[in-house]
Image (cartoon, rainbow, N blue to C red; front, side, top):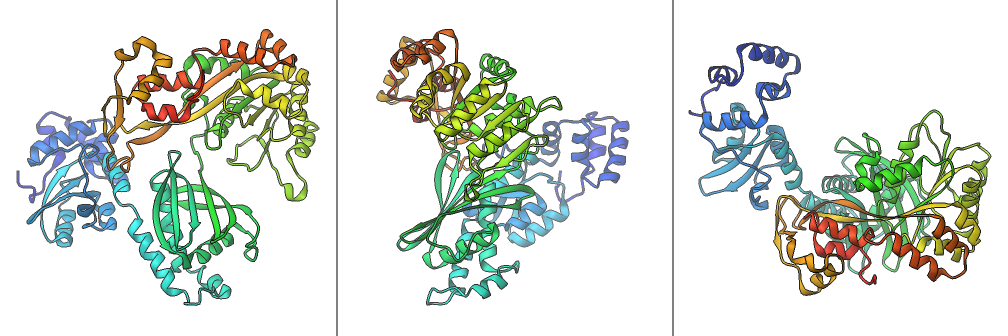
Length: 568
């Protein structure tokens, strides 16, 4: 069928007995209300699946039906079509040949769109039909803003005076205008960061360059290099946005601000620090979770989740979550609070900072500038008659003792501690100066957790572990090593060439019992460590990480990175 002729999808679907005439009439009525395309309306009404519809269009129009997630994308070809046109017509340019181009389309029957695209590209178009959801994801991944950011950084540099001094009054005035170069630059940086799921943005002045880097899935990636002259203008604008002291450049400062990026609400935590080449700024991006926090979404093994739920419904005691910065401790604690949040529970949190707002919970922000520290807020919180208390971190002896005493007197206390694993947490509390008996009587359980990167499903392929990786795997798998297959990510456009996409949590749970409580009361920590190792044998961070490797969810090198490689 000639694609230049108008195709009546509904009539053809009825003729081929794929849908009934009644379903077509119903879909046309719904289409008048929503204004959506008939094909999308039929899919939304569940009269036909998207795959069935696309296969039908492919056959009728005699054009290929592609899985765009598996199709290699060429940046030089993608860039020939402006992003505005790609999003407007829902298309992506896949191949650029001498006389024609291959164009992935969500709706190949859009004749007006085809005419406009032909005018823009000035070449014959070979259309291919693709799933709309996959196409929208591919557009997001393909149109990175690297070139745009570089151009805006250069524009900002050229607008600045050669003496490298900034006219504050001019910047304050121009920064309010939407077309100010520094505003455009930061807008593009934030949009690109959200697009690639970055958790942090690092702005780092060096001797001759300004580096902008993104942390994606726990690993830093360089986004761009810019002229060092623009660093002061960028930092000054960020300070204005977060209400920091713009005249203070010698001391570190912390702040926060709220922005909307790509229809998403994002809280930004900002930290500035003076370095020898200027102020370094790190911004943590906290995308507001509209679906809320849930224990089921944590990815805990079912048996561990059941034990965790039982612990959370204890009337008193302390539960600790341990791990390094960025290991997902806050997410675990917020999921626990969401489980406990009800009209019958009074919940108070003491945090620094408050990362997410939780409805129905009394959250307190620590402010050490006015002596509102953890210990002071915690003492005040206990006078508020709480049932459950969350303490952001057990960072000193006073806070730990108040928290443990609260756990002994009828309160459930949740908190975090910086230790390498679950076993070392009770010892760490004792080293901080907390009496042994207080730890023994109050501590219910300790969770240790890490985040591992997940192998990209689009470019996953078999892999043979290196000799040193096989030696490490044998610590858990023993002689069964040869029975398992292993994988890696080759690197593709969907995962930005990293071979990974997304992260999963790995947990270790040490639940206190009578033996461990008695051992904690003794001054010989070796006895406690020996008993604790026996209790969690086979359920350590390492063993759970290896389980993900065997399940082909992650790689051996990633499991080794997050677990204790020197564990006996």
